[in-house]
Length: 365
View 1 (cartoon, one colour):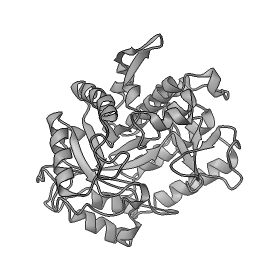
View 2 (tube, rainbow, N blue to C red):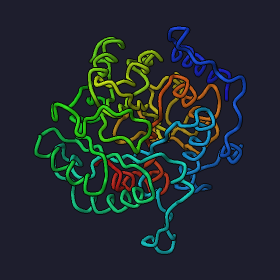
View 3 (tube, rainbow, N blue to C red):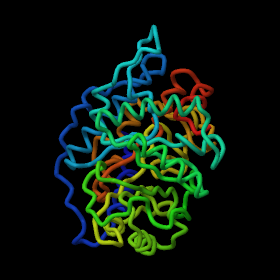
View 4 (cartoon, rainbow, N blue to C red):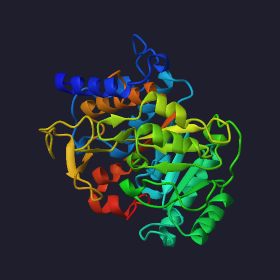
């Protein structure tokens, strides 16, 4: 890792760990190497020299091993990338076996737009997409992985129907009232979470409902946001690390988020993208652009300021995991119970190009 990157990462951790002294955890003096770390290639490799699908699995496995080495019960959810759950015969793509090592590295899976919301918000998902996603999600569920569904819907009838369809498979459903950064408010329906309960939520298997927020700034100050969420009874709250640009949630705010209004404890997870990087990310350098560094590839179709990255490259992996300067280390020290890994479907871009990425079963197009 370059000296400038170390400085930026340490500045992030310094800001990230701003909290009352009594609430601050002591960082370990030395970080033991995670089992997957030694397998990271020491030299850059171009996309034609690697298997992007397998490299994404390896990165997730390395993240999981490192996180659990830091915090035993830290949970890792794979958001999207459902096809990574199986290994397909290259000569017959209809033949597939469970990717068991990858599955064991996960605590659960999340998928958007399974029944409603893709491509049209509040509209029914087309049968081809649903039929591609549901069997893979069912397989994950049968193997013991909790499945969270986040469909884009706001009308009561659509949300009720989506929840009913999800419940038939044992999936946990959330009707998100907006997409992307516009997901900055609590849903108007239902007025109380489905399956609202006073229980302490100790693992993903205990979760009956959840809420996701991409942008928490509209709630006001951090303390105002944390208290607003404390007044709800969701079993799991998923948020971005940063409340505003350059202002990560404090450890005290994260701790406040962990308690329901009704009294029980709940889980608080952070989103982290490991397949793309944006020019507004905390670690982005002023001179970075497409092709510089070489591992920054083309812009994503969702956001012209976000770029696919060659996630198997050592420099990128050192940014996201495996050391005290990494994004993941900061999230763990901040007190989050787990992480939701995004950007997993970027393997399609490196395997078959942009059209394949947009047409993949996990795509929101």
